[in-house]
Length: 375
Image (tube, rainbow, N blue to C red):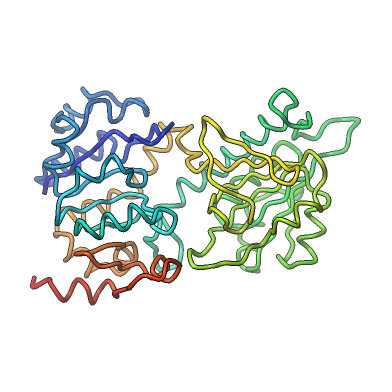
């Protein structure tokens, strides 16, 4: 198979899907890798390193048009639409629910797309999301330290236990990987940290890894209101279902919060768990709603691109190799977890959540593949 490795074009996106070590793994298995000039430069990987690994330096358009599988990081951008060809595989973070135009374009062009974020495992976790969730959580806390400074529009509160002043209070929605990552840094800085979750096992598991200045509360309306009234920074770390129309924190709830408090939406689902959140960029990261500053950067890990690219590549490479070595259909049929990420196939939408939210026709992914595949 021919693998295409492009340079990301999203604003402030410095990650790359495959490190030189990953390229070597493809070449070792008999595949070709076409890579675009400087595709890894933002993460500290040179063209020379990719060439040494067996990659072939190729002009951008030829990377897209000459590959069987495009292996990338971010959602499909309009500038990429005309470079796709029928039967091609796109393996990336798709977020098809939030990028309907791109999803329809993949359907129209009969492109097979597999989304990192929807691949699960036997425990119901999302292994291609976890490494980025950890970085997003830690990066979100770093952002909170920055934007709470008065010189950056905040109320001048140092998120740290400091003698002579009240200790800041941090509230975290969700005890998953990103929530625990926020709590690790927030508690290490000496803050009072409260984590809310609906899952008792999730809270118990998080408790094992965190110090005693982190408390755990059942996520219900009463406890949420208690936390909203006292918190200085609210972190949202809940992965919101694509078809949900409700919220945990509604616009009216922001009136309960202290003036000058901050919301950091790590999960960054537009109009998701927090009604007032909408995606922002590293260039223009914050906005104010109901007097509350919001930080909703949708690619926080890009700020730590070297670390992010290495961990992301390690998480997705086994699936990419499986599709290259077995062929896409065989790999998808053999692995129900990988198949869970199949979003478009031969002009059919195969991700149920996106179909439900946007009232589109849905085809079960296994049924869609078996209709055509004769292997």
